[in-house]
Image 1 (cartoon, rainbow, N blue to C red):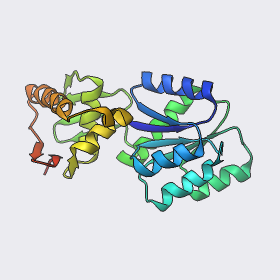
Image 2: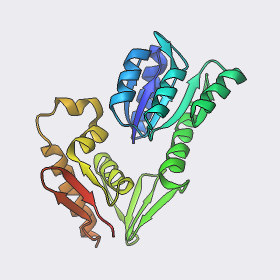
Image 3: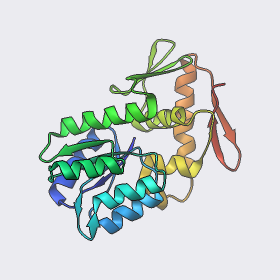
Amino acid sequence: MKILLIEDEAELRKSIKQYLHQEGYLVESAADFVKASEKAGVYDYDCILVDITLPKGSGLDIIKQLKENNSKAGVIIISAKNSSSDKIKGLDLGADDYLAKPFDLAELNSRIKALIRRRSFDGSKSIVVNEITIILDERHVKVNGDTVNLTAKEYDLLLFFIINKNRVVSKNAIAEHLWGDDSDQMDSHDFIYVHLRNLRKKLMNKGCTDYVQTIYGIGYNFKTN
């Protein structure tokens, strides 16, 4: 899952990024309104964490921008401003949740997981697609009841395919989702093929149907029907 963290306090930004990286998320960050607005307008995220008070602008305007652009990202406000008016403004603009500073990082993680389940999987803690079962909070995958041991990137790739099943996804979209800003520095998409080849092999070794269709020159379609 890909997260954008918008937070100007350097130490807090660092600690949140480190914690969420350890939990398996791909985390990008922005320290001011201008950079946050640029990233939110160009890239796709599963969840965006927004501080209200930012250098050069307001986090509330970021939320407004996201909703005007019909962003599919879930939004959690993280702010020291705990007045009811700030909370109401943020939620009225379209934020999904509000967490007042100081907060426990484990609680933030729980809020993120719950938000992603609500927005992408109707609140379910597990996903079942034919013979594939994914237990989201545990990042655990089974095929026909047997555990499939996937790397972090293989798991993220499978989940991305399932979220977008029966739709063509471009190689650029996959690269951005799995590697974020670093994808711009890669000369080719060969690394996607390597992870995809390994993912398919592991699934098929457990008796899974090969649902991935290659759309030459474009990307892939995880076709389940």
